Length: 138
Image (cartoon, rainbow, N blue to C red; front, top):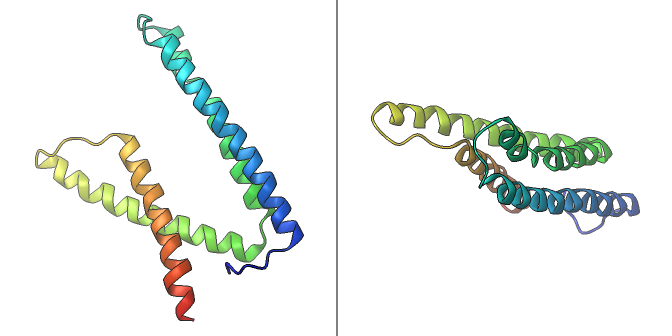
């Protein structure tokens, strides 16, 4: 799957994806810091809430770049990556379900950001295991 021979189309698609995602991430970072800077001294209210939520728009741009990249992929890569996502989702579900029992025993509640980090970490770990261990055995 991950050989060193990429077609011109794959290289072009990867470059386009990197550009689209990179721009979205830069915009997200800028809007995030600006919204925090502007909203922090404000009193609670609908305007402050709206300002705090403005980073959602560039985040949606990143989401759109990812969707476009998935659509450009061939079927094999799409299935391979979606399997990794499904496994990461399963591991995250097991983690959050199990931790729910611990919360019932007095453990601190976790932020949604922790669940996101668990999901992304699982996805990365699964991808590495599949790429470097499982595929080398075949």
